[in-house]
Image (cartoon, rainbow, N blue to C red; front, side, top):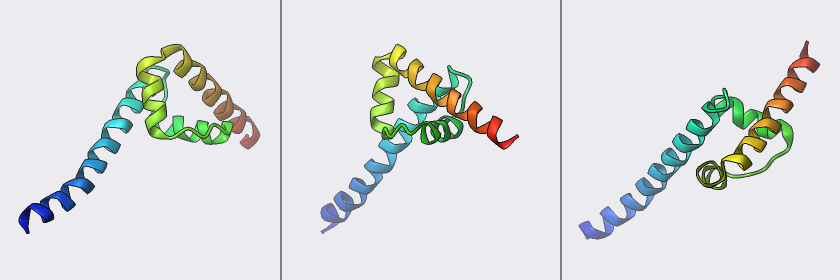
Length: 86
C-alpha cells in the first residue's frame, strides 16, 4: 500500500520538478537577451508565438540562434506595446 501511495505522490512531484527545471532553463536563456522569464513570456504572448515551456527550453539549449530570433520578436512586440500605451 505504501508503494502505491509513494508512486502516486512522486508522479505529481516529478511533474512539478520538471516544470521548475524548464522554467529555470528558459529564464536563464531569456536573461542572456536582457529579459526575465515573465517579460519574455509576455512578449511571446503579444507577438502571438504559442510555444510551450518544454519546446522553448529545448530551443534555448540546442538552438541559440533560433532562441535569439524568438527573443527578438518578443522584444519587438513588447516595445510596440509600450509605444501604444504611451
